[in-house]
Length: 99
Image 1 (cartoon, rainbow, N blue to C red):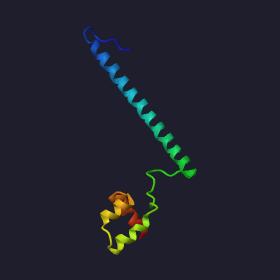
Image 2: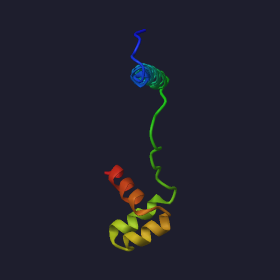
Image 3: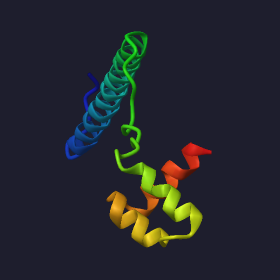
Image 4: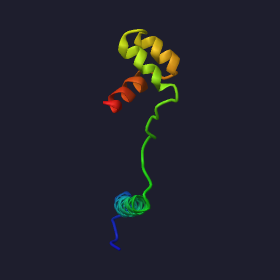
């Protein structure tokens, strides 16, 4: 390497630190690319096997027939949700799927 004048050894240390940082960032970036590629390969393999991702779809409960009472106006929506034991969002999501 280059010899630095006395008292300027800190310049050499600074250059070494910069080189270490640059090389470290190159290694990290390459590792990140490898991880993303492997992840994508895994997702593709899972999709080929027919595996579904995401939250499972809400299924209609056995007592969904009570919805007819709500549709006829016999009971309120809140009462129907209580009897069917679903939350508001699930209730309306299932209604939308029914259409």
